[in-house]
Picture (cartoon, rainbow, N blue to C red):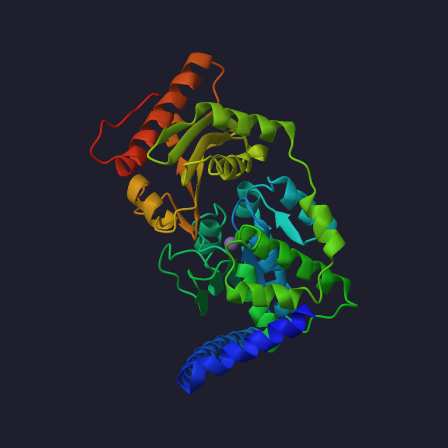
Length: 409
Ligand SMILES: [Mn+2]
């Protein structure tokens, strides 16, 4: 009954609109159509180039380098590239130099059997890299990997670079697809697959698991699809035909460790709030808990009247210390990449300490001569205070350009 009323109402409204608005609608549809064809032409061109590159390197062995602390987007996209390359008889090793830190990433790799290997820098230096005829960067431009400079120094040519972070440095690759406007590398990889680079098959267990991993990567880089754009939804819709929802659920249900909870507590306690920014130093963190930093930033940005959160700490393992920080923002006009580059600047070699993508960013600052864990607690405390003060001072210089630099409330 009610639907009848609606239909007749719609009918009457449509009649009232008259022909001029109908024409307008047609014109808008036409524009949309042109835009979409333009987009799909561009994509077809990109995929054609990638196909040529894969054909050219048929039978070779490549090393896929992902960031030191890989996230789901990087892990799943690297896996998709590996499966695509296998179609061209190119065998790929997916490697990272750091560790899997986030509980969801550990679960993802364990539950899907995702073929990524951790290689320590020292082992990589001893490894015979001449077995590789080319390297591949996925969801990275090499700046967030301690491993990539070693691969570069070994003279292995960069064949493919696929990423969605803002440009970090000039890359000399045979195929480059860097799209800072795209929310996830998983979206780009899914588009390649949809364009025929790989035929997903629900009876192939690896395909189902890779589709599940891509779905997770896409979700996690778009804040559970809340920041997703049309192309991400289209990619997700395509993946929905192949992924295993129960498997994805199992990955998402992995629990936080107590140590991660403790870091979040510390971030909450230490936070300094200025002009809608929440900035927090969390002190020393074990290498394996490194991912607690972005998780703490994710949490701090949920406070009312806060649009941007930055959390940082000194991450250490047996022989290395590094300041690592994460930025999360909900402010549309704040570009994380620009903010981090402008506040923290560059190192002696002219490389930025960090960068970002849409609504998120990160940085890594080597400690150099001051590094090394020390039994002397006074020294350890002093060292943290120096870094804490310096980083806050730099961040505050943009948050509050005119005011006194350090606030202690
Ligand atoms: Mn990503």
